[in-house]
Image (tube, rainbow over all chains, first blue to last red; front, side):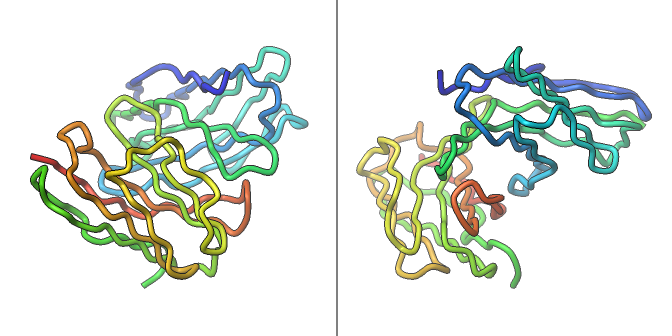
Length: 112
Length: 112
C-alpha cells in the first residue's frame, strides 16, 4: 500500500514529442506528489509538484495531470528537447511526515 | 559552496574497512536525510534528522551509523559493509516536513 508504481522504465522520443510518464498509488492518504529530475552525476532536483485537490498543474513545458479517483498521476513534457534527457522520478508523501515514497524512475532520451 | 554538498564523490572500500560519508547543507534547513539509490529500485530512505534529532530510521542494518552534530552537517559512518551495499548514497535537506527536498550530488560507493 505504500508503493508508487511508475511506468515506463525507459522512453525514447523525437525532439518536439510529448513523453508521458505515469505513476499509480494505493494509499489514498498521500497528499503531496512531487516529480524529480535527475541528470547523470547529479542528485534529483524537484521539477514540479501537485496536491490532490488540483487536477492539473503546469510549469513551463512540464505538466502534471492528476486523477484522484483512479489514483494515478502523470508527467507530460511538451515540446521535448535533448536537454530533457534524464531520469524522472515520481513520489508521494503522507501528511505531516518527512517520508517520500519514490517510484522506480523512468529514463527518458530525447533524440535530436 | 551553495546547496547541498557531499564528500567524497566516489569511494571504494573493502568489506573490513571503516569510512564516513559527509554531507553539508548551506540552505538553513532543519531536516536532513540519507537515501540509498540502487539501479532499477526506488530511492530508499535510510535516516531522517530534524533539528539534529533522528526522527526516522527505516530498518537500516547497524553497519550504517548516522550522525548529525548540527543542523548543517550529516555523516554516515560505514563499517564491515557487504558488496550489496554498493550504491549511490544521496543526502538531502528540507525546511520542514513535506517541504521540498534538495539533494546533493551523491557519493558513489563500491564495496569490494
